[in-house]
Amino acid sequence: MNSRSTHHSFLVLYVTRGYNITIQVDANLSGTTAISVSFHGHSITVCNVGDSRAILGHRTNDHKGGGETKTERLVAIPLSRDHTPYRKDERERVRQAGAAVMSIGTFLEKKKKQIV
Image (spheres, rainbow, N blue to C red):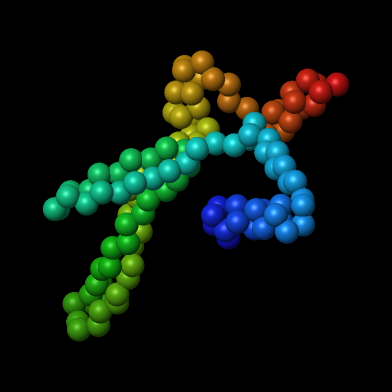
């Protein structure tokens, strides 16, 4: 269901049933992820944010034993690297920018202490 049909569904509920629906989203665990790939002749430009991933599928033909037997394979070629704190260099980059890097368990513990 896309956002337009979701919006329409809520509007129908509001108009026909009198429901006033409020959706609250906790954005503390939200993030941004996007990737774009542009082709320019024989060049490719890849831009990514977050843990999106671009992979190019390349079809190859392997010749076995110098004979006529060919095996066709599809090889995945990574075009991007995930921006994720699971990578040491990314974790360090984020820390150097002044941000905190923590696991979900650590985050939830800190949030629980704030509520109490």
